Image (cartoon, rainbow over all chains, first blue to last red; front, side, top):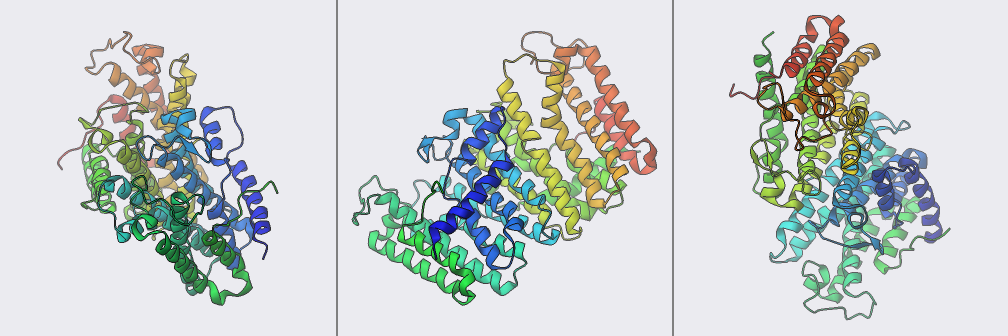
Length: 293
Length: 293
């Protein structure tokens, strides 16, 4: 399949829907929300919600509020994680981070507004039976909260300086990254009313994809030029797969996770082709970036 | 009616339910969540959800997850508002604020966890039809988000130094305080399946109560000993009703709001007695505090 084209059409739909969630306005908070939300990005999580939901029989317009909610939660987590009290990052996607432009107070509120609106958006989905809306909200709340992203970030903050082990890194990443990937595909299935066996397959796919994504992300951070040897010096964050396993075994880890994801959706036929193409491209490090298309 | 007794029994129920939401655990994030959530407080918003919902025919056990969600959102907003980048407060209810005890990073995550869990908790309410759960979630998301509390706090942050007018103060307070009071009573009604005319009455009550609460809060801040003259010096925040109207007119403002709240629920009979007693006590400045009962 033509993954670049598949992603381009879905990204365009998602961009337009996100723009409609927060139309341009003069107030500083709105400008700050738009600055972070409409800053490009791969839109991988909302694309996964659309891909999993369409595979399970839902229509794109039924799925769209949920797909956007995933991106709102992802963006909120980036804005809060970049804060000085957290990871203290000055740049995000090549631009100054929210708190650098608007100040820390507004950046905190941008995250709070995005997180609140994610749930507001899902609650406004009129095309989907209320039972499914409630289930999707529960999925996203668990992925975002103490059992998911927030809990992972807290472990990360608390553990700085602690001993790094593969089990520990995996636990943190499963919460920080994996939970939202898994929620993205599961919510697609939930909105479509997928039966339990299909939901179980989507869950296994989401978990494996989340792991593969994180390992590849760590590898690309450690070895940005793909020379193959990577950095093994002190500057390399200990809490990463390459630091703990070495570059070659980290790569093998990502490939193994990809194969688990592919196995999970293997019996699902041609409809699952986008999910296969996405995990394959993620692990090959060739997921098409945003295009002008 | 015996308001002190009414509040004591409901507060006990709410305290127990909040404790069950986040059982004691060793991890720092959980300890920090409990530190802020179980720090006492009037529990006025969840009590209002119970009072409005019972008046509209729901049972307490149906209402309880929603009542707790209101308190989670209220607590999250206090923790974030206290941060150095916001109001920079060192004390809250006589104890060091969350970021003073656990650090800014964890305090930000405490708020994020509480906000996420508020929606998770509502989505888990199994005793209430899904349509009502979705409607209640929408109410709380709007009250919390850019149109409500977050928007009010952003206006407050952005407006520091701007000209204070009654209209401006009222706009900010309607978002920062009023929206959540209104949501508290409306959500009670929504969970009970209240018909539109009753919901409209609850809405008018909630708005008027929110205004009365804020004016009285401003008065008590400006004149903590109730001597009647209050502070008119430079230290008095300009963005308050006493600063803009003078103490006597601010009091008249609160009394007028109380009368509007009472008028809204006047035809609702004996079932509305708790709502009447609450707004009356708030404006008299004699709302019973937490007791050991």
